Length: 163
Image (cartoon, rainbow, N blue to C red; front, top):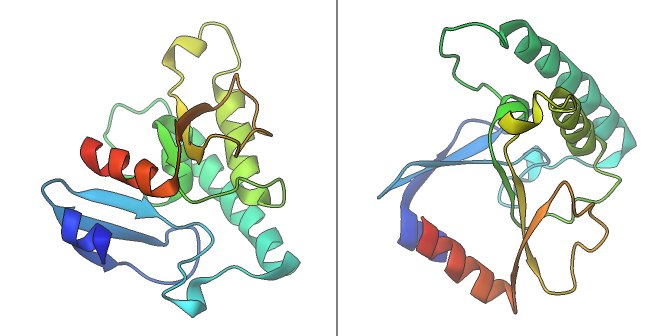
């Protein structure tokens, strides 16, 4: 597997819910969150309207928890991808970011609301999307930074050079 050779070993924490992720350990440790599942673990994949609707409640619960801890001075480790959505730079890889992905859009809208006031905008972190030239044109350009490459292979190679 190309990614495993480049980064090192990886492990999974589970297959259900908003805390689903893989951790890659090698030169640097990276955590890759899979909100809708991973093709290598069929039980993890989110299918159908009911499962997507259930994710909305999980996203809102995680956002509420984040807001409670927003002004604490204690370092709080992220327990779900929603925690990271609220406060860290984001990089979308291999996602269409389709409007049907309600949970992702709900988390993004909540993030943008957090930084909506002028005095908060200076704290807003960027949202990147790895894309080919003509893809992801439906995304609002003031909210997403498109990282373009002529092909997906070239995109992945550039990404590996960063990590």
